[in-house]
Length: 98
Image 1: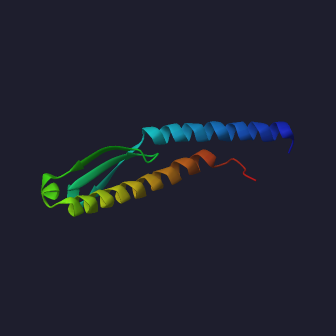
Image 2: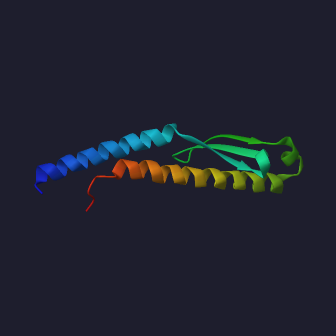
Image 3: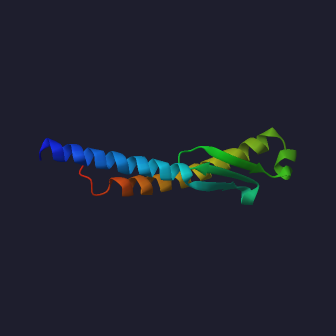
């Protein structure tokens, strides 16, 4: 494989990864805890864009809020991880990596 081909493949990969990252920034997932008592909206780049907590949970105190926020965040992160794996896998498929 000559250097020009290698450079072209690297540029193609860079463009695909940049497009994938842009797509992930626009993709939103919802993490849900306790049947909707807490909902976290997160982008595919792990930016939290919205959180809603039921007043019933807030009335239970700080530890209840901490519990549902953590659970909703982890649910959103798990969903974001799955989307990231898919999008980045699609971006890099077919490109020979050393």
